[in-house]
Image (cartoon, rainbow, N blue to C red):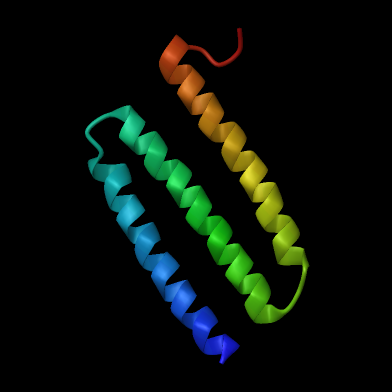
Length: 89
């Protein structure tokens, strides 16, 4: 039963990633593209966690945590670049 739920979750998250790719390509401005990238990071974290549940190992959860930290820093850097024009002051 858990494998069927994990398979359904993988399909649903993959569809949402495809929709994020569409928003990334067709976004009218840079802010929409940054939000699409941030949402894609969240979806990738979801895929990693579902893979961890499916395979029953804890290493995927640590990878998801590291990916979340890197994704947060990247989003903050992109937003700071849009607001000020530079990342490092």
